[in-house]
Image 1 (cartoon, rainbow, N blue to C red):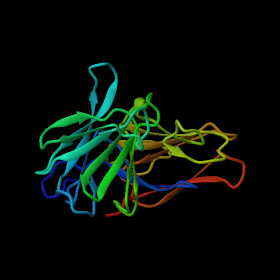
Image 2: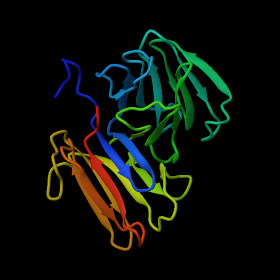
Image 3: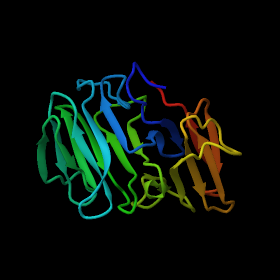
Image 4: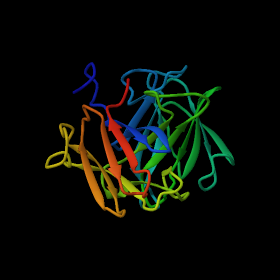
Length: 241
């Protein structure tokens, strides 16, 4: 399905993670941000209709990394931090309309004086990334966005250590989330019209792998054996407007 003749939006789902709050997960390699409803991530703020895009690209140094592309009439301020620390930014540059810049492991993206987001790659062995919306900024009722490129290299993880994309204290076993192309067909999968599935796996006391085909049309609660008590749950549902 397209929106007013625009290209298909990046498939997305709403995640409710026990002890870690609400997230918007986007399963794709290019994600647009802006005030327009045609953006993949709609920002309710004084920003351009399509302000910028994040695109997964091959690096000259090997591997893949995310790049920011300025799409609107205004430049995007990018403050790149050393390692994974957004608090110790040391280099600020203005990305002019039409230009692009590599984001590395961590960067603060400044769209307006009071509008900013923090980009992080908690695990450099994965192309999954997290965007934290700052100063009360929200999209679809949430303040954290998870970018999940399809394929094994785009896996994200939930656990207690700093290397996890979503940190939850007290988990005995890690949980993995990944996007699979063509995974929405088969037993145990719902939907599947997008040709994608969100896969949630846990090698806990009772190993389990669940595939949820896209688009998600109704909320679904996944109970996982990541801790003994209480049971650990992830709620998967349609993304809000």
